Length: 168
Image (cartoon, rainbow, N blue to C red):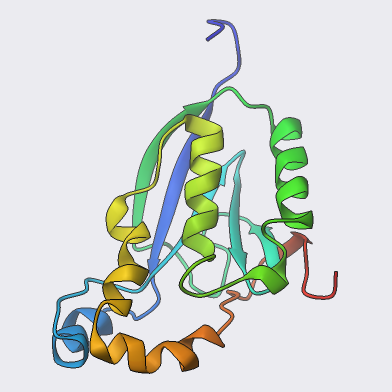
């Protein structure tokens, strides 16, 4: 790394979409404890970036209808410039992370933030987040719910779609 290069802080914003209900209901419904239903976003360059059923979006940190995050994880620093990052996101939004490619269990906000974290810092997001879909699907109730849950496209309101909307 160039000692004179500008470095940017990279954070992971973690939101519990269940607002605590997963913690209390998961043992009854799934037979195992889940601490939350996680939505994640990357915060870098003073913006929050996330992926959902509308594609890749951005907003001011904590600016979606979800409000402030439940947890903030410091992922490290990056020397990737904002211009290079935006070109990278544009490329992702035109292909891999178009809105119509969103899948709740296999290709979601958490797979997006994990990929972006690796691009920016070389590290991953916490495994308890990336492992959540397989934990749910490993239960009989998770298998029963899968057809219904597969049709869900989560897109937290409040963001500006960068590109990759469903109509592309």
